[in-house]
Image 1 (cartoon, rainbow, N blue to C red):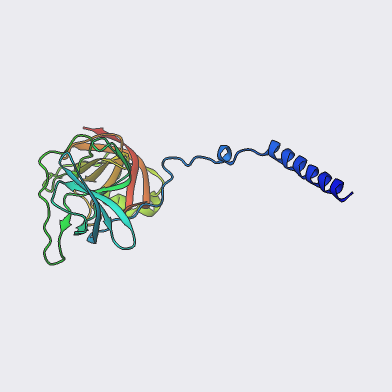
Image 2: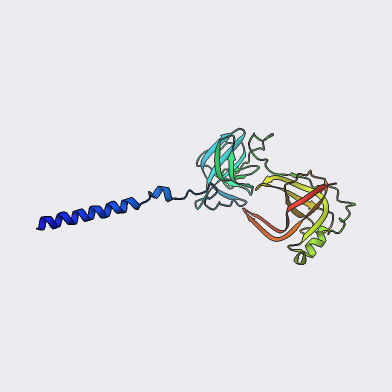
Amino acid sequence: MKKQLLYLSIGALVLTMAAGCKDETPKTAAEPQAPAEATAPAPTATPGKSGTVAETINAAGYTYVQVDTGSEKFWAAAPEFKVAVGDSVAVPEGMPMPNYHSKTLNRDFDLVYFVPAIMVGGAGDMTAAAPAAELPSGHPAIGAAKADNVDLTGIVKAEGGKTIEEIYTGKTELAGQQITVRGKVVKFSPEIMGKNWIHLQDGTGAEGTNDLTITTTSTANVGDTVVVTGVLTTDKDFGHGYQYALIIEDGQVTAE
């Protein structure tokens, strides 16, 4: 009798397990795949941030270094220079390129800071690499076209528009409003975070209130007179050190 009860119990257990297995979906089929852009928060390289080189790669006139600060790691790249794993380096503020694919290396980086030079050595004896004459294929331009001697005389305010000084003075009332401004391009930075960046001046305003930043898909040359129309945003923080008291995003830029 005891044996019959044991066999019945085992049989019931087997049937229960079989029924459970019928309804079970393999875990791997239910697990969602993380999107490619879902990476950990990118570290920010601030001016003078230093650390030791954990990895280095030379490719087509560039040197990439992974810098370990002791609390974080980040990648930076500069025109080719001599460096070795374990060297102390300092990385100045540079152009952040999140989710960057290097065609030359055929490699994806969560974030790379492109800088004019990376300092190598101790704090009292740092040397910078000389800038490359030409950027290698597949890499974004370092720095930006800039001129300090653009002639700002004779610029007339756009019809129905504002001067840059007026925009700064009336920023509280103008925030979130579409505005128009005419000025000259004093700095042009292409393809940063998927946009072109223009610094505009019109000869009005004092230091700190005489330059307006615009992001756009349009291109421009330093010295061009342009009319810009777009919505004014205040206290914009893009992250990676890109903070602006005033900015026009996705502006429509018309060269004259």
